[in-house]
Image 1 (tube, rainbow, N blue to C red):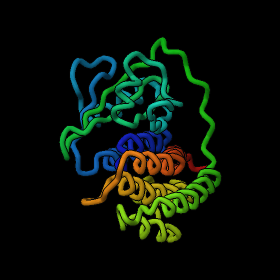
Image 2: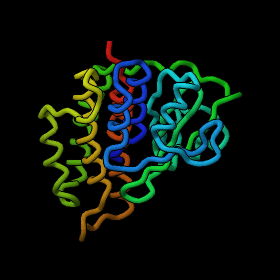
Image 3: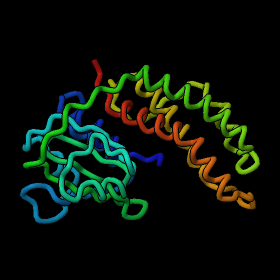
Image 4: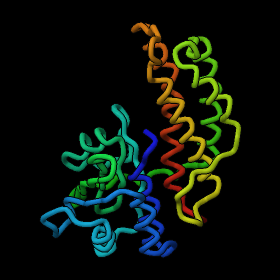
Length: 245
């Protein structure tokens, strides 16, 4: 849940297309330590390098990409291109442009394969509302408080003692590294908090060894975590999609 190659792609490609980042910096920001290949680009018969893909995106007239984190029952922001929804739901993320949508899949620890879906003939989506970073930051605060109280009532510490410690440390300021230098400082802070809360979710959803968690307890836990999961998802999207003013 904590790795968002589609987020890095969206933020760095948008910065490069807008002239706010160099081609080399955009490539470095997306690649990290992995090899990336892109399949399905118009005019190509096989997967191409990420560098070639960026050149093609500019030729196609792309101007901006947005991160979308679809889940079952909520695919807002995802165009209705044939075959796209199952692919994006399996990945859990997509970078959505005006002409193409790119969906990543990890092929082992060091290779990312991107699948491009063309949007020719697909009805355009209405422009998504720009995420209000202060609003999503406030939603995170509310979700953390509500979730902490709910999980305390469920005695989650007995299942996984690391979770309460993570929750109590969320007041500390943290920022997410690896984004363009001019990215909104509030967006970096929101993303850093969302990433830490993502760790809480991952730990809370994992049953600790030896913990006796029955079906009813697991269902109550999942229900308690649902508002936090949605707040983290929306905050992550808003933070990656923020555009410097």
